[in-house]
Length: 431
Image (cartoon, rainbow, N blue to C red; front, side, top):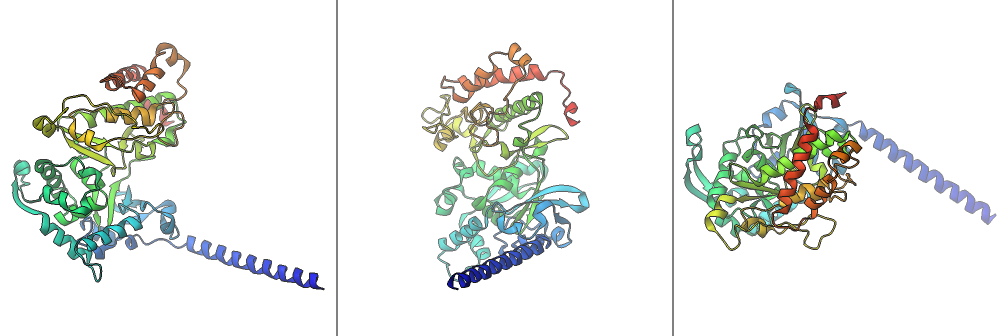
């Protein structure tokens, strides 16, 4: 009898568990049919401690609509990166909406602002960011944009900014020590079509510099970055380029060779350009690059981890070893990409970017996940016959310790890829 009672008890528990599981499943399925209201992502009440307000009327008019899985309410709780796919309906244009940080990172920003001004209780971050702006404000005429009618009369003092603890761990500012470079960045931001104020730029710097990078180095000027359209509150709107590079890992070798050549050209432009400003991405992962399939062009779409260096200033200061060719290495990190920021700040030239491309993306043992044998894996036998040294050159580029060797090797790889791609019509890959 005791055994029978225990059996009935177990059956009741099973029925209860099954009922609870069924109810949870029904609730989940119900939530899955509930669309996420895109305006719930804006956090407009935080302004002026936000990114901009130029697109608020567009959001209010319902012009942006989330698409794919991102439109369903439950996704809000699992989308840690706070990056959403959407369409700008009047323009029929695909866009990416970014909060520029996780919920935890954004909360940490607000706590840091309040803590710096000792306002832990009843703290209004909008007031705090204006106090921060006034603290670093510098009245100074920036004549860079005078010819285009873009005279700036105020800026922020980089020396004061550098003394504020909450700015001290920002990669983008690591090597920005001169006022001229800081003025250049702020000028490009202030006169961007998104019309941010200085307090907006401060907020962007504190959470994630992606919009400022896109504003400073615009696609229309030949930079391989997505267009930045602006923001409402704490939701920034970027151009959607296409699928990430790792999605092309299994595509024909010639197409992948084209993308490899694009990567090396990007490394070249970032390292040496007419502006005298070097850009050093510190995360060379395949999913940080996207392909515009219509043009087969490659773009860096994750702009958070970039160190900016004024090479003209390095040449002017002539610090110890400034003109010695700096060789990037792994700093004891065998299977990952590592760097020392001060080496990038103090050298007029470094092979950091070539190291990122070859070691991170082209090598047989790349740092980047999702491309386990490198982007140029499995070359056709005819290519191997014509260029038996290609594989060795790629590995030499990834691990080279010869002075200037990595850049020279990258140039040889580019020449081989250009030869293989000569007269190749990339449109054949559309079929």
